[in-house]
Length: 210
Image 1 (spheres, rainbow, N blue to C red):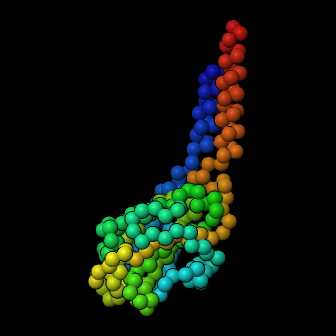
Image 2: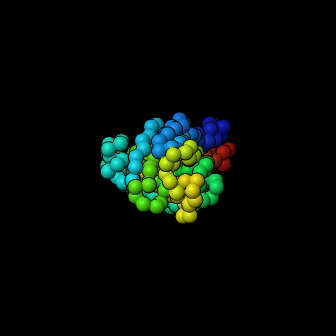
């Protein structure tokens, strides 16, 4: 009986752990345009465009109604989005990591991560955007200027003639779910743990009567 209760307790704990499957980078989508190549994984597909990216561009590219949720112009965290890049000024060639807080998926069912290149005149701005695999929470990204426009000058808050990334943004669309993978449901957690603890309590009372 005791081993059964312990097994029940461990099973409850296992069930309530966040599902980390979404945290594994799945699929790398490479986009080449404007004399540059940008890649991002944990993505399904992407698109590119000129000028400053807005929600209308995302609607045209991916359909849906999109809300800007976070913006980073340097390494660090802004709300649901965490970004790291090397070199720190994000000038080409740059490699980095991105992270989405799992609670993002409570609010939105779809995500797009975009990078904006160049910061000297709207005509020089280029963007690359990717639809993220649902419930993913981490991945890698790169940006390399191959020649040509490449976004012109840019790169974080500074910028040089190599061309670089000016900012990375997180966009959300659709209705999220409190039961989204990677986001433990509080009610289920308490119920399962309660069952397991009740089982242990029952065994304890039986043992004390002997």
